[in-house]
Amino acid sequence: MLGIEWAPLAGAIVGFVVGLTGVGGGALMAPILLTLFGFDLMTVVATDLLFATITKLVASHSHNKNALVDWQIVKRLWLGSIPATLIVVFLAHKGALFTNESWITYLLGSLVIFSGAAMLFGSNIQLFQRARRIKKPQIFKKSQPPLTITAGAILGGMVSATSIGAGALGAIFLIGLYPLRMKPAKLVATDTMHAIPVSLIGGLGYLAMGATDIKLLGLLLLGSIPSALLASRLITATPPVLIKNFLGLLLLLIGAKLLALT
Image (cartoon, rainbow, N blue to C red; front, side, top):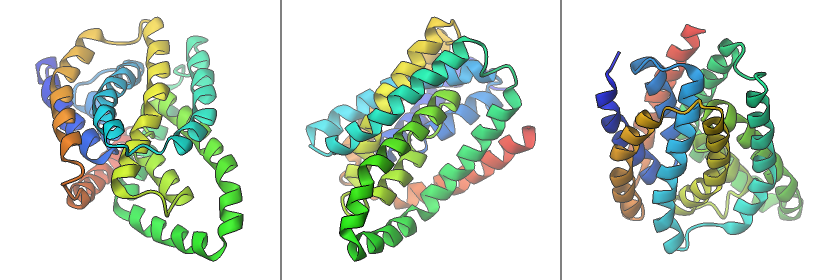
């Protein structure tokens, strides 16, 4: 197991990924804290949620300044994700969520694998949905609002229970529901902005329960904030395809490792 003094390096790596690609941050951090640092699952989820909130707030400043956020989509997602987050935090407070950690670890591993697959095959999904959108525009557009709210509810539940899903899972929902609007930079910015209140509400809920490791959080942020700032400034000039492909393969391996632990 790594000592906590290595936490700033872990934060820097994940912060750079979040700022540059908008996905992979939670999918990387939670397994790192579980398998390399040896923290228990509830501490990992609680700490990672606040870590994600602050890191994404840093990255979102540049995204909003560059007018990359699609606020209509963000608001639709919030209609589903914020109530779902409140429900999950309530269940955790009542002790009904982490009584049997094996199913959450299994869910976490599955989401990590999904995140990896999403990075590798997301462009194919977008092309398929783009063809459907062009072929039947009226039907497609009519279904977008309710499906977006439903997607938000799924994201809120997954994120607040595992700290994973807002990035890669959110990106898949967005390119599937809005294949014409979601250009790479706008996808990252919109996905990141949606995740901020979701992870904040979840993180504050766990913090109130005393589950957050404040020292660990501070050390992670020490590395993540400067790297997220740097990466968010590079997003419009850096093609993230190679990074996403590498991360996709890495997350498939990490997810398989997590599933083997259950």
